[in-house]
Image: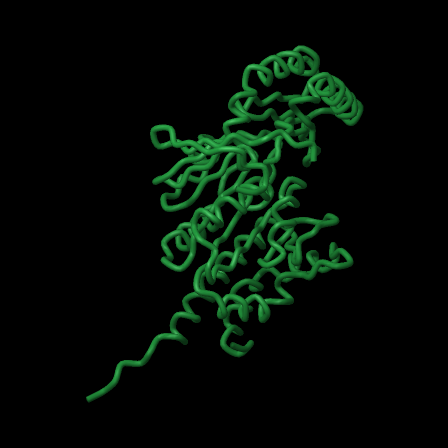
Length: 325
């Protein structure tokens, strides 16, 4: 197989892969849906336009094109990040949760036979699965290093093998930064997150310097990426959200399938890069490879509601009328 897969093996229901280390229809039908997603949300839409980047289009200004692509496909594979996408960023990671509206929209989509939902997060798999808690969804944790569909599971073997080294790195980072007010070091077994959202500006800069310096001594095995007030310490292997998305698509089958990916983080850019044939949406204002953008999780929720209604209308329009007599 390509993309760095060296071997695969089945282990009592867990698929483990060893990964080689590598440094490197028309607007008229949908006018009710436009009012659905924009109702009471005009200020969000205006704010979405104001943060527009040069090559990225505002999603709600392009629903006709989205509708056209939905109408031309048989199945949809919907990928969603969690923090900053489905749920608002919180000062304390443990407090992040789905809003009732987002939970309802996601639950309705998860029950559709023509659509598969996958939530792909930097959180640990057990955390994101418990936090969302909706059956019928594929959950991917640790930036795609571990995946579970309910009927099959997957873990990147190389990341598991590095656990003892990661534990040593985690201890050294904790010794240096956990004494700093507002800092949280989260050990997620396959990766680490160092949160500093509650730290002062001075201490935040200090944390970034310390974590990067310590991780540099483990650079044969791990790398640091910058998130939103968080540093992600991840294995230096050829696996990321983009690789995970590709693997899931191949696992489910790509024939006549449209992939949609919505995410807010720098790690989601890896997924945008491999989905040039799909629909990619960046949440928030940032330079991005995504084709579209949304301002915040509230608009993501409105898009999910629109998508559910759009699929209902598509199915109604393609249903063959029963013959009379």
